[in-house]
Amino acid sequence: MYFYDKNSSRRLWIHLHGLATNVYGSKIEFLRNYFSEKGLYSFFAMDMDYEKHTTTRTLELLKVLIAGFSEEYEEITLCGSSHGAYIALNYVRFFPLYNLKRLVLLAPSYNTLTLILETFGKESLKDWLEGKREATILEEGRELTFIKEWARDIVEKDYEIIEGDKVKFPNEPPVEIVIVHGTRDEIVPIKYSELFASKVKVKKFLRVEDDHRLSESVRRYVEELL
Image (cartoon, rainbow, N blue to C red; front, top):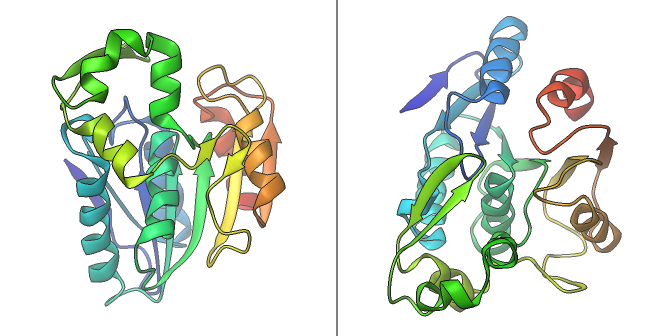
């Protein structure tokens, strides 16, 4: 499933949803309506099914999308929510930008695999880490079954952006970066965004009184994000 709304001939907003959600989330619904009403951005979002593909495959798909859309739009904003932000950041690390000008990161994950292992136990997921079997976990009330290559691909390609106190991202990024993170986020603690912003030049870092979903904050701060 995907949404593609043509509201602007110059600017496109590509939205990457979180790990356990899809294109029917509240953020996507709000942004679609907002951009349609204001005519600010064309809008694209699709069901990513992250758990069914390696991060490398997901990034390769994103490259095709950004390259193709760059033929039509002179300015592309890539917005990632939680694990979607993880994908967006790794895209900037490893792939050509084309007309990508800005990242908007909503409650971003910088170390998705590490957070999964901390939550569910490294020993119980040992065979998955070695690429020997699939792994099923419960994420935000949704049961996700990850393909057996998923974790090994992240380790081999070094996709974890934060490891301990180390931030693996350019200090002077090639695109603008805007971060929104909730102080009450219990899934991806705000400390990771604080560490990232201390090492990487970001245009804006909004600390908001909200949880991981950020549903109300996106509505409240959307004009600041833009």
